[in-house]
Image (cartoon, rainbow over all chains, first blue to last red; front, side):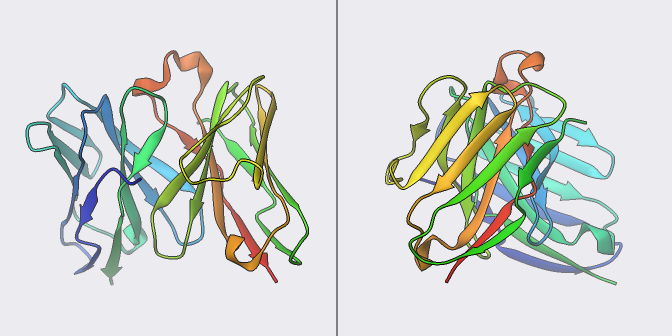
Length: 110
Length: 120
């Protein structure tokens, strides 16, 4: 069964704007990860945030984690057309397996 | 970075036949690999955890006799869809973690490029 929900399911913005995606989960976790998927392709790891961390940055990406609310957000700043993809959060708890959220389809309009 | 190669990238087969999908970690060893299934515009559903040298662990609702998993070496796991039916048509993706990075709980997973299966 799926761990959580992502919000919004689809997001369309203009190039240069910031994109924010949210993820909620249901159980306690070791870490939360964000992945990107281009249409019909595999997933690419973006960033991992551990349960004892609250915020993490990587280039134009900023991830926050609120374990009290069981939620995370991914912010992409200064978006580019090449950022168009689906973005998934995934949680890891106990076992090594990852459980994925529903995903957000992001479209960056040039 | 670590690379996971999945083959074939797409396959079309007739109903009733079996199809084998390979997942290889090219530059690292993976005791454990994972198989996912993804329907169009949906998320990844974990099907099973593949364990080197032992039986796979299947998620609830996944038929182990339908989806045969073999993990004979530290770099190769295979998924065989047996007696395929049109409803098995989907995108199948494997992933693996690098054993050398220690316990897998706080490490990233590397994904294959996926296999598009179409059963006609």
